[in-house]
Every structure is written in structure tokens, then in C-alpha cells.
Image (cartoon, rainbow, N blue to C red; front, side):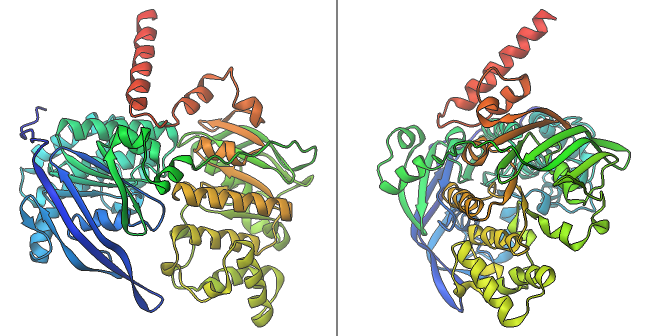
Length: 550
């Protein structure tokens, strides 16, 4: 399908935000979130916004639409989009602009789709409401966008429901939804944070190609410096709601001026020397598992050493989280055995006794959905204390305070609700909740993937400290190779429900690599603006050579 939309002049100003001031309400008072920030974006240009959690990246990105989330208010400044004053127009006029000229791509695609409607009709909804063209044309256009985004079965994938596609596929369909009405500006808010490295490469390449094809301006919000290096023409660094510095991407990467920016560049230097253990706390022998009639684990055999950390890595759909569900009894295996300290574990959760449940705990990827927003921190951590240990009232509260100290929070957090916590603080509360049971084994399922790099490092250091103090064993499910290097003793590589290899970290991360392990390692973004282009060219050349040889 040929693009009938005109190419824009990249020197023409599209968005100008002057002296933006936004307040947020917490602890029964208003706080300054954005403190007089400026932003300019030309048509067809991509601006990267980076900074740690609480820097104001998402707040500023949403403000570019003339929007502030609940609990926030714009108290000063001006926003001009394509000559339109976004502050003083009506809500209806804003909604008309959001459905045609400005689009937003969220971090969590799964939470952004209606589970009751097919994807193709959600993709074209904004364009259809705006009467850009008739439904038949828009469906054809959406299918072409799916092809451009390298989605499999592009002719038919749109007729599936959200739960019938993978996370990476859903993220690309959300990008197609944003592109469908041909907006002049797309705000990408951490669109690849929760994706495995191989899927991330596909999504980044697809986003970059489609933004280039339609000459769309974009604000790309991320905490991953290597990712923003592949996407942005310019980078703006934020901290505590203020601009630290801004520069063209190559200049920023090669010569950051400010101390804070340099500190962002140097994070994730954490490494852990591997340690071997002769004792096994958990072993899986020839485990198979299925979702209905679909087999998802194939003869998986894994040994988890006591008091150490085993990282399980693999792309989306490799079976990492499914394996965690089998270990916890949430998904009973169809064949094979799970032995805990030499004794067979019942396959079903409901058949395990309280002591077996206590010993194995799990920390989930998204703290926002893992904790009850209506409970205080004291209630969240206190419930497992009461359930497993029978402590109540003052004893329970004292134990919660002890756990808060372990996770480096004080008792001032006792009666706060999740809404009043940062992403890193919420994940610390989830860690404390797991520790409340006094477990021997904790499964960490992508617990740092949604956090900025500075907070990630804090959480990893905390987990290491707790392991040293308590002797707890970790199974660490992750797609982040930097995390694997930082925290693991041993590594299990999974692919399509099978174990590709298992061994000490030094063995797995040193060549020669099996083909799939090599694919994972080569997909880790580097702080080089040419990295993605070079990687794609290399892979395309390899495919071409294979086709010639065949």
C-alpha cells in the first residue's frame, strides 16, 4: 500500500513546551513534580527522554498531549502543538487531537487492550472514529502496518483476541494502532521495557522503520540508555523534574557534560563472582507441562543449588515463567518429578501443606498488579506473617518494621498505600512480603525489568545482601543479560519449552556458544547509535548466505 500522506519538513517546529510546572498530590500535600521545564520538537524528529524513576519522564510525555494523570495538575507554562494551544482548548478538542494528531504507546500493552474485542477493530478504532476513511480501507491499511511491523500471519493475526498473541506481538499491534490515524506525534512510554532481548530488537527495528516511513515525530521515554541510542535524534536527561542537559545523541553518548548524566552512563557495573554449591535444594526431573492440549514444557531437568542464584534466561515463549508456575504448583506438571530437599513435592498447589507453601515464595514482575492498591504497606507485608507464623497486632507490626528495615525502608512507610510509593519502593515491599514467610527459595520473575537502571542496581544489591544474611536461594527469571552477570552463580538457557544448556555463569557466558545462546547475547543493546543497524545488516546477510547455500 503506498503512503498517501505527505512527508513533513524536519526543520519545522511541531511542539513547544515552555516553563512547564506540574504538581502532584501525596502525603496529604502537593509536591512539585515538573519544575519549569522546556521542550522543543520538530516535525519528523525523535527526542529521547531519560532519567531515573521519579525524574518526570512520563509526566512530561503525557503533558505533551495536554494531559495530566489523576493526582497531578498543571500549574504553569504553555504547550503549543502545531500552532494549537493545548492548555486552553476544550476537553473535546483535546480528544479530537488525541485520536488523529497525537498518539500514545504505553509500556504495558496487555493492560491497554480490551480483552473482549478482536485486535484489528481496536487497531482501527481511532482512525474510524475520526472518519479518516471507511472501515474496509482501514482494515487493509492495518494489515499492511502489521506486515511493516513484521508480525507473523499479518493477514489473520488481527482477528485474534489480545490473550492469543505474545507480549512482543501485542506491543507491535499497539504501535500499529498508534500509526493507523497517521498522527504527527507519537509518545512511546517505555514500549520495550518488559520484552526479552530478541523481541526487543524486532520491536525497536519495527518502530524505527515505521516512524521513518511516515516521517512521524516521536518522544521516546526510556530508562535504557542503549535503547534510546538506537531511536533518538536528540536526548534530554531529566532528574527530579528538571532538565539536567540536552544534546544530539552521538554527542551525548560520547561526551556527557553533567555529573548526573555520567552516573547514568556508569550504572550496572555490578558483578557477582560465581560460587558453586554441592547441596541441591530443588531438582526437576523430566518435567512436562501443558496448557490444555498445547504442550509447553518438554522433559525439563534442572538442579537448583542451595543458597545460590540460578538465572533462567530465554526469549518470550521459551517457558521461563511456565517453569516457575510448575515449581510453585500453579500449573501441575503432566509428567516428571519435582523434589524439594530430597522429597517429592505435590504437583498441585492445593495439595501442598502450609509448610511446603511457606518455603517457596515468588516475587512478580509488575508490583503495580502484584499488590492490593487498597491495602497499606503494613497490611501487605503483615498478612503472610499472620498466615504462616500466627503473629497478630503488636507482634505482627514489630515484624513488619523489621522487614522494612531489611529492605532499607523505615516505619514511616507502614501506613502508606501503593499509590504513594515509587516503582522501586513497591518492588521492595513485594520483596518484604516474600521474606515475611521466612522462605528458603524465592522465585524472582523479571523483578527489575520495569525499573530504571539506578533502581535496578539498588534492588539487585539488596537481593544479594539478603541472600548473604539469610542464606536464601534464588531462581531469577530474566531476559536482561546485564542482570544475569550481576546476580547469578549458574545459568539455565531455555528455548521453546526445552533446556538448551545449564552451567556455571563463566561456562555459559564464554564462547563457543550454542546458536541460540549466541542469538540472546548478540541481542543485548550496546551504547552505540549504529548497533541496531549493524546487527540487522549482519543478520540479513547471514539469512542471504543461508538462502544462497540452500
